[in-house]
Image (cartoon, rainbow, N blue to C red; front, side, top):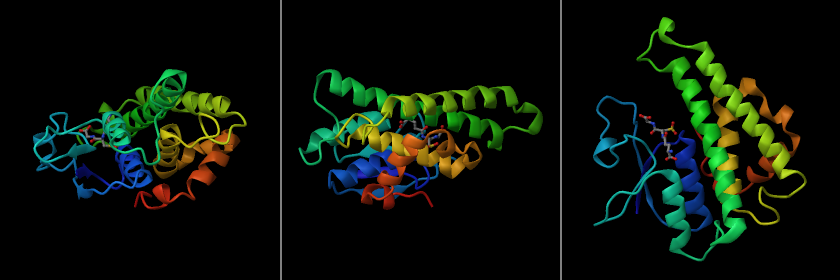
Amino acid sequence: MKLIGSNTSPYVRKVRAVMLEKKLDYSFVQEDVWAYNSGISESNPLGKVPCLIMEGQDPVFDSRVIVEYLDGLSPVGKLIPTKGRERVEVKTWEALADGILDAAILARLEATWPGRNAEQRSPAWIERQLIKVERSVQAMEKSIGDKPFCCGIYFTLADIATGCALSYLDFRFPELAWRQHAPKLNQLMIKLEQRPCFIETKPS
Ligand code: GSF
């Protein structure tokens, strides 16, 4: 298996963390999707990473589809419950974590994408996205309560997705200081940061 991605993409990090938790072997092919000569669209017409390549099969994207596929490949370290309310809960946490990333990345691109000049950037749009981020972090804080992990006593994909999203905020939006406003999530994050799947995928 070949994973096309980058060290700094939080969606790619989620997939790499799942690979590590499930002890799956893969080769990591780094791709700068923002480079003018990027070849990513040959594998993913959306021009995005992560993208999973397996010989003789169509490429697989996006990160949610990839992690679901990987989790089904082996019973080792099951991360997504197979059915029922537990499954919906894990997938909803993942949707919220990915949604934080979608909003944060839209805000960042609005502020920094070199294809726009200063007059074309919209502070109102950036604010709209950052409100979503803050509201969602608060929703997570409320939802985790005193549970050791996002969905209860077991480590799941919800924790990986949440950890990747919160760590991205540390990396790109330190000024949001989310840890000060979400002490329970901070406790979770401290625990997650000690796991090899987070240590080995830290953005550089
Ligand atoms: C999002 C992937 C994505 O936006 C997923 O895989 O979960 N829903 C998708 N990837 C970014 C890299 S990053 O910001 O993490 C990407 O490839 N962007 C290139 C572009 O042209 O938007």
